[in-house]
Structure formats: C-alpha cells, structure tokens
Image (cartoon, rainbow, N blue to C red):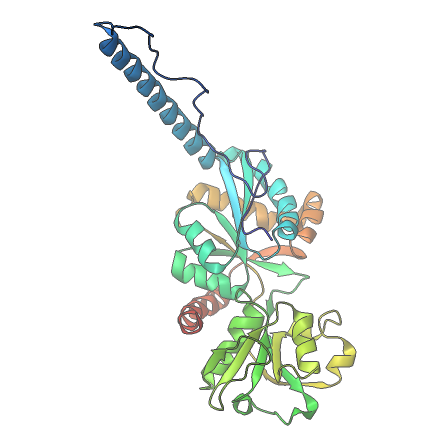
Length: 352
C-alpha cells in the first residue's frame, strides 16, 4: 500500500513521486588541472576563479529553480484526503479536479494535484506546511482539522442526496446487552481511526456515558471489568461479522451501513439490535487551508456549488463518493463541527 500518492493533472508529478528541482553535476566535471612536474604560478588563482564561477552558476540555477517551484505551486490547486487505498481514492478525486481546474484559470490556477495522507496527523502536517489547499473529509476529521490545523469548513457534500448521518451501536439479540453500561468488560468492533461514524462517534458516546475505554490488540484480548475494549476491524462487513460470530460483543458504524446489505447482511441484521445512536453530523465536509487566497477560495466555492447544475459535472460528482451537490454550511452544522472538533481532539489524546 502506498503511504503517499501525488497526482498532477498537468503531469508535473506522478503517483508516489514528486517533482525535484535539482540538477546533477555531469560525470567528470570538476576543477580543471594540468598534469605537470612543476605547478604553474597562476594555477591556484585560475582554479579559484573557475570554482567561483561554478559556485555562482550553481547558485543562480538554485534561485531560478526555487522561483519556478514557487510559481508552479501558486498556480496549482492541491486537494488532499486521508486514505488507506490511494489508488481507489485517486480515481474518486481526479474527475472532479479535472472539472474544477479549467474553471479556475481566471484566478490563476493552471493545474491540479492530489496529495493523500496515511493518517490524520500527516494531513494536519500538510495543511500547516501549505502543501494542501482543499480537503474533503468526514465530519470528525473536518472538525479536528478545523480545530487543530486552522482549516476552514466551506461546504457540505450531499452524498446520494443525504447531508447527514449518525453512528449506531449494535449487539446480538441473544447477548443480554441492552444498554451502554452493560458493555463494561466487553469488546466493541470499530473500523479505523479516521472514521467518524465507526470510531469517533461511538467512542464519544461511550465516554459521555462515563465508560473508560481501552484499545485491544486482538479479539482474543479482553478488557478488565471496569473498561470497554475496542478493536479496529478495518471494514464495515468485518465489524458485522465479528459481532455475528461472537468475536466481539458489540459493533458500531453509520445508520447507512446498518441498512446496507453489503455491510450488514440481512441474515446478520435479523440477529442484531441497536442499543445506542449518536446525534446527526454532516456526512461530508469540504475544507480549505486558512491562508488560501480569498479570491481562489471564493471561485472554488462558486464552481462547486454550481456543479450540480452543469451536466458536464455529473460523472465527476458521482465518482466523488456519490456526491449529488454541494451546499453552504448553515449555522447549525457549523456549531456541530465546532463542538465536535474540541471533543475529537480530547478523545484523540486519550486513545493515542
């Protein structure tokens, strides 16, 4: 699995690579010398002069390369995301980026790039260092990046015409577990650390209920009677399977996964019951780095909001995680994200 994927529409870089602005010294190049039994009285000064010229040339090349790199970065729109499947996510992001970039030429954007991070900390670093301009993420990650990296939420993505979702915690019907309190001494299966509905929201529900949490190494590992142990199952189907087979006592993912037979087969769901649900949160959030040029920010927002009215964008929107349209972030969603950001940061310190 690639940890880092960089894709440039203009061909500046390729997946897994990056553009370098170094020039190799040709083989054999060096300070000329004369093979002689006796040194020339002027050889030292000539050598120093040649060395000075070479150093000046190298300095000028570095300055020119730096100016070129700075100019190219200023005219490049970079979109970022946390990914554990870079190749698949590149295919999801590229069509919309190809649609957006030509529409931003009037504000100086000439090319687009995709930069994928392996985890939230790496994406936070990219934002702080100015390597990413535009981020698409789930609510918890968007809230964390807003609180911890100064990214600004600018739009909500409506996926399959739905703009919000929630987390559900479920158990087998024959488990005897009916409330969160009864999960003490038990195990719950979650997806991965970047998931809103299958990591942060269920753990926040447990913490709000006053239940201590601890990460377990495997389903064979067990918490003590005063803790709830969580494990990362990596996929929604694995979560449902672990609960069905008794590898864990509970599982959690989104209400949409609960109703999706690919993630929760009907034969499994017939054996399950819900014991808790979280509040609704925005399903997808588009953010921009805090210091992006306001002109570029406004132009991108206009293009994205208008994309749903442009037939040429239909395929690109569908590839973009099943997005049907983008809408402005209303005050209620902004308040949810602000509160969630503080909660996610506190929880992250607790579980990492």
